[in-house]
Amino acid sequence: MKKFLILLVVLVGAVTLAGCKKNASDAEFEIISVADLKAEQEINISFRVPSGIISTALATLLEEFKVEWPNINVELIAESGGYTDVRKLTILDLNSGIGPTMVIGYPDHFAEYYSGNHLINLQNFIESDLEGVGADDDFVLDDFLESYLDENRIADEGDDLYGLPFNKSTEVMIYNKTFFNHMGYTVPTTWAEVETLSKQILVDVAAGKADDVITFGEGEKTPSQYLAEGLFIPFAYDSTSNAIITAARQWGGAYTEKDNIEKGYAMFDNTEVKTALAFFKGMANDGLYAVAENFGESYASNAFKLIKCVMTVGSSAGVGYNVPEGNKFEIGVAPIPYESADAKYVIQQGTNVAILGQSTNEERSAAWQLIRFLLSSENTAKFAMATGGYLPVRKSSYETAAYKEYLENPPVDKINHSMAANVGLQYRNTYTFFVDPAFVGSSEIRDAVGSMYSAIIVNKKDISQAIKDTLNELGPKYQK
Image (spheres, rainbow, N blue to C red):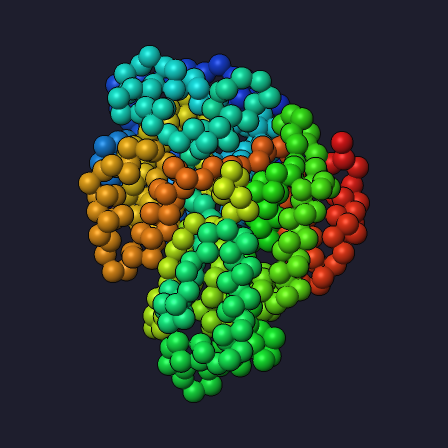
């Protein structure tokens, strides 16, 4: 009998961790050996994740885990509100003295859990000399991408891991391949090339040269008609927060600075960031560059499917959202543009997995065995292929026969995701993945700069004034 329970929960409102006794990060606890764990009659653990493709892919893997560990029952708690509700509900539970055994989340979520002393130090398991528990031939720490591990080293001192990479993605540029082929364009690689090409696109679209790129049905508008209405803009960036954070890196400016897990600062009031913002605002003023809000949309992918834009930057995990109904045109996937060849930065996205402290020794050890199982070379590759657009977290996964086939000869329904995965593989040798250090409140700064970016790009707000207003809204606690 399968013992997987899917719970759908919706929650709104802000939640923060209340002060709690130390019960996890510095705790000494007993690690149960594989033999003793398998001798246990029954162990129940819970795992909180977002609902959708992640919980669906996990359910299949959990069936395989159950075969190997029949006495471990995993309750898969899938939250319908996505990562935001995973965090909110976990904090509510922890404040009530309960909580799931395991959870996935972003680094800034883990910073909050750590601040409340709720994260288990996974180094205890990794360094164990018990067979089938610590690092070994099946669980090689060096096999994980170092940048993925680094964001889990959240303690103020030392390199201990309080989480491990689980589902990772990045940003890619999606372009209308049918449009590009029809017009004879070359895919741009730098922001300067994006600007030059976008100017040419506007000229060609205004002349009606793109109106026969596909067959437009009754009631559908052509690119030239959208342009006449001010609704055709060649390039659109999906995430406003990622747009400014990535630009800060590519132009060499600071975004945030971490003092310790409890304290960090907003550092984006600098010349480099202002220069980057001036470049994108200039493109926006010329009708070359947009964000989703310019089109009255929540996501740039919606405008892309209508051919209101022909290039967009979005998550590799969301490439499928850019595919038009009926496959009216073909998409292409390429690396995001960069400002200069010596600063080819691309943001590192996706979540990590952790074990929470309000659990027994048996539950923690069972949860660790589930982590080992899910993060094996074969299973992280299986998960990546099943979810589409997410990337395996181990280097050896790319060499498994199944994943190599996925990269080189994917099934028809996975072609677009395979293109995104190939770009992710290309990044490993040609770009630098980055993620800014997480601290309590870093997500608040991220949200604030995203809103600021929209005000500059959409409402044409003065850059210096926008920065000043945003810093004032964040308040003195984030000022250095």
